[in-house]
Length: 180
Image (cartoon, rainbow, N blue to C red):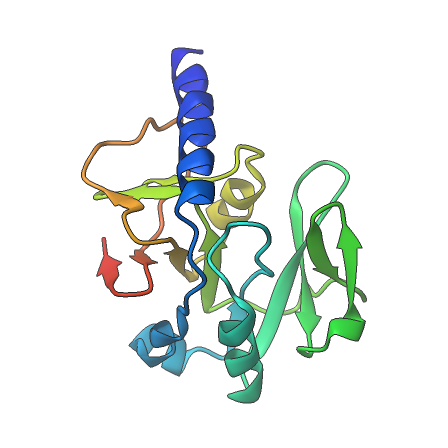
């Protein structure tokens, strides 16, 4: 219970810090990473509010003939993956989040998953938004996982971790990518 309270407090602080110093930038440098170059199936997301902007990255993935998948939130807060063609017409707004329209895909294996995060520590522990949806999706995937972060959101301080939390293999800011 203490960890949960601590994580909640950290999320509030990190969201406020992110809002105060938000700068639009690009994360397209991760397109040159070996795991992404060799990947066929890549899951990504549509950013909102003060998250790292994914628009140019997502369009570049689609144009490079990668099979791109976006998450759709299920009623139980799990995620399902839907193939996306890169068009705005194939998206629908669910609260603040754009989600793909169409049938969920299940006959594929993801090679890379690009995940949102508020902070990542030096061991690859990711602090997300708190719903656990990505942790549940990541636990069953062998994909290479990379979190997108703003400058200063990779931390040397150990983040609180619960048994269900899933690590990422790497994190990228607009300037750097760090492997764990």
